[in-house]
Length: 398
Ligand code: 3PG
Ligand code: MG
Image (tube, rainbow, N blue to C red):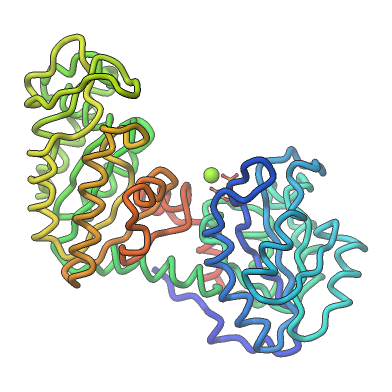
């Protein structure tokens, strides 16, 4: 990964620092559902502020259609952000133009302002250079701390990075360091645990990762597609039957690259996906025609745990069962606890990311026990596909 500049390489004293954050937090009925992204951003703001910067925070929020929409205002984030950094946060009702200029001009060293949603301007998502110039006019330095939005080539993540001296914030730095330790320069053996519903959405990921890891463990409904491709009858399980050829190609590729592919050998099956529905554990070649696989079974958990015990590094994306409904959370929770224990004992470097994955880790109460849990969803996935993230590349370009 190209070396990027961090806060260690800039002198923000007295400067206006334009800080690209990702305040795109989940909201439920006007309340923040999960404040992780705010908490993880706070140290960067606190550091810049204490080093005498005038901090101008900008972010997108939701997906408004290029014009102001009250439901997507960042104003409700002002108080939570102020609480997280322990100082007041001013608010500008626009991210460019006179309202933004006035708010920025009023800042004294150490002060913090939040600008209104970048996506209230259609030019943001178009990576428009003129819009980026308007943003650039508000700052002397640019700091990007929005790894979770780095897969977007937008004005605030890409064009702007080329208009001002640019650096990565502490969260961006931590994300990049963790990802590098997991896949670029890992301690081997390195394992990947990939779950989720569909092979089709993780095709590029699977193709890339078989060339990177020593062990590839697959669970979740996507495992059904691979099993089916090998002639296993999966009953009424979620399965992409039209992906069988592709699945066989992935299996063949793993073999050629010396990547140990681990698929479920038993499963927890039920007739319907409903709370309280009777379920049973069966060998993977004994799935009844009218049943569906909703979790990995205990033999599979054991086999995976054995691989993990022999690994030094793990990358995890995707639950291995329908963890949102008991008892089908058992496999994912057992693995999460195993990963947490190995990490605690200093035997495993564990990096996880993706919305469902983090929810599953939270469900197992081990989010804080992994080596690193990414704040990113889509960006984490694209990175696992071996793609260059535009927001990261833009930082290295200077
Ligand atoms: C995310 O939550 O994945 C990021 O904030 C990016 O948001 P987007 O998918 O709307 O671009
Ligand atoms: Mg997204």
